[in-house]
Image (cartoon, rainbow, N blue to C red; front, side, top):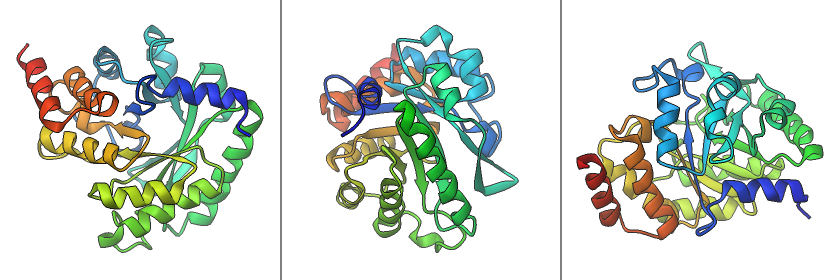
Length: 271
């Protein structure tokens, strides 16, 4: 049976009405460099908070210095690993579970590049994180990305590879899997089913071409039965961070249509 503390934390991540989770990821700079839109991280966090997502995903230093004004209003997910432009397939642990507890986080997250020559080391690191989190009932989230050098590029977003990465994470004891969207509600539903009973949320990935593309992706993720979304660039590079979050909330928590969400987004941008 799931420990009470873990259940409490997962429930705090979930929207009370829908049970789904909208997380905004602001952990990109260590991994990819300071992307456009992330130059002033305090300003980014303020704009994100004004849209009222369920959670933010932050690294330790950013959380310690910037998250206090939003404590109790928005859940914190602590990112405890990082790759870099100089080792893009090798996530390393940089924060212990103790940091997540001390900072009041509702979950701890790490990323794993599946299909990498580093996979044995990465799996050992994941197993250690799960063991460390269990005694303090801290939910574990893994960003399960099958984009290692051993996976053919054309297969990285396939249901087969994404399902494998997600299932492997679940089998290691992970509570929530964040993974690639496979391109359709039907194929992503296969991932959700394969990873159960772990919850599955879709990563937003690189900036999509249009706002409609972003909202359609979120709609299809809901139709697939997933637990929510974790978007970064498709929110804080959208031109109106708060309005995009509200539009996504309408889809996730009100079972709204893409057309309704687009109308909300347009009204927010024009307002």
